[in-house]
Image 1: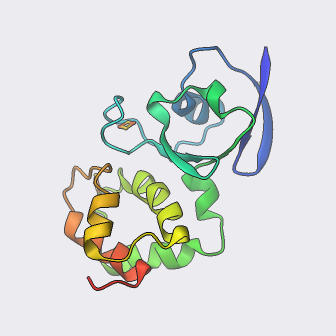
Image 2: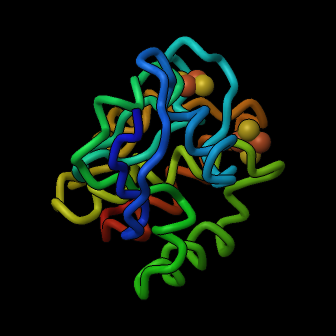
Length: 153
Ligand code: FES
Ligand code: FES
């Protein structure tokens, strides 16, 4: 049975098995490979996308549960007007090395920046604690986010 799924503003109708994971549908059916698979158990944040504006771990999120809602991946965020300033802040701080974790960090960050929830470095560290960087560039990542949030690094 085909079900409706809206991703990055585009409406799709896809045959989706009951147990299909959102990450697999995005990567394998829609060829949106920005969201990454790493831990596969909702620990690292590499697979983070937005569903209805809220970050979810797409490696553990049933695709059916996203049907009827709006999914946004890093590909959609990167096409938005305000993304250039976000990317520039991370570049200026040399925040990412291999970049594997970057899509997850950025999708976690988007609603935090929009809501104004980041008021201190401690807020940034706490709110991003669910995203892991195996290159361990945490200091520079937090510095870049502090720049974007307008809080003291
Ligand atoms: S791959 Fe989904 S949380 Fe790590
Ligand atoms: S930059 Fe390599 S995992 Fe984060």
